[in-house]
Length: 258
Length: 258
DNA sequence: CGAGACCTTGATTGTGCTCAAGAGCGGTGG
DNA sequence: CCACCGCTCTTGAGCACAATCAAGGTCTCG
Image 1 (spheres, each protein chain N blue to C red):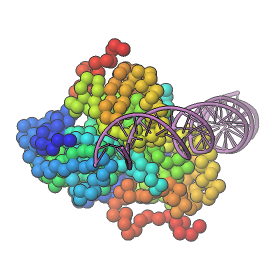
Image 2: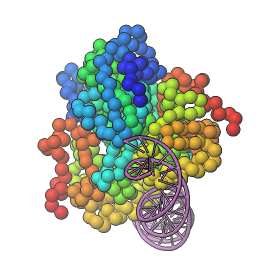
Image 3: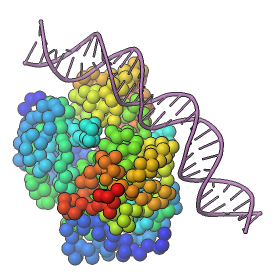
């Protein structure tokens, strides 16, 4: 959790946007010129504690941020996960709604004032379109999660989720080989997938014993990508990973062998 | 299923937009001038069968349209429901993605060419903002569904869903008193809620016997709104029902008595 | 009147939850 | 430096909610 370099993190976000949207040099400059204040958040800390949470986008520099939903009796559901380079609370740009954001692990963030985002969006239509598109991708992912939780059993759910995160981390340039760092507890995994931590544990054991994936506290190691994708019925198209989708589908090195 | 009057249906959509966005007279005219072709769809029919589905928004005039997700083994999940006055496939305006739309019941639709929508959006910023906001509300609803399916038991899920639909139908001016017409089979209810039709049936019986709600093939009759909302832990704020939210929360007549 | 779609109910099974206890690990303070 | 404490992971035993399998009933439409 090194102190984040704002320009570097904004570049990571820019990289995301460019994966699906054409932006010219002036767009780049405008985005990188956003006044971004860095802050950090310990695991399980609520983002409101930093004050004025609603009027900002939160660009993740390191760690993991989750949007949380809660039932009256205290059950929790993670509705969206934001990995480094992604911005939480983007939808609030068009729709005033305060959602509960929480640090899944120790994280560092950049506050992007909505006022600044609106300004560059109003001046540069391409950027506005890119930001909207970014929000829509979040919508697509949410829809896929609904299918996953609504209609797949626990094992398939976990496999599907791990496939998704593998590709997202990889697209962000944060995976090395078939491994990536995803600092989640098994309880939080359960909160993503609508399962109890105990059952998550059992299913992970099953996936591990079958040689599909190895998941320790922080490191996810994909052992057999093809088998994992099959177990999760995973099809990456909903992630809209830019022009990569048809020809050069990103694959893990162990996709064919094993 | 009378043949829809395009202008009338577009007005219904306009009414929706005006619930959350300020639009001036010119905006109204622009929206109502969209060249809209009417068509009808029998229950269970796929929208692709009408051709070129991807390049259009689909404004529901009557009936019910669902966005469908499917697992490899044929299990279905309804990801979004569009009631009359709502437009399906709006997100495709910013993000090329072909989703599967299907008629839940016999329906009539208006095809709104994306080209036409983009044109009025580019010329009238307020309309563009309104359309984006409309999509974001869909996003919020999706998030609430995820919480509902991920963390509530079958009875609460159904209660929550019925509360949501009651308010949505009512906001569209399609509910009379505490009743509204929602043409869904119990199997489709299960596809919305991640349940089997058999179990939906049993839970409906329970809700009926407890005097909360009465659901026949087409008509939903809320018997005890407060109890139903409590059973579903329902809080309507995520629906963003315009300025109604704080003071004049829409209530059914039987909210207090019973 | 017959056929098909949908609803209803019963019996049984099973996936995932609950409750519980112990082990590993990392951080903290004496 | 070591002991302790809390958090997370792991595993077991029993339970319950919802799925599955199956059969009969109702309604609507042709």
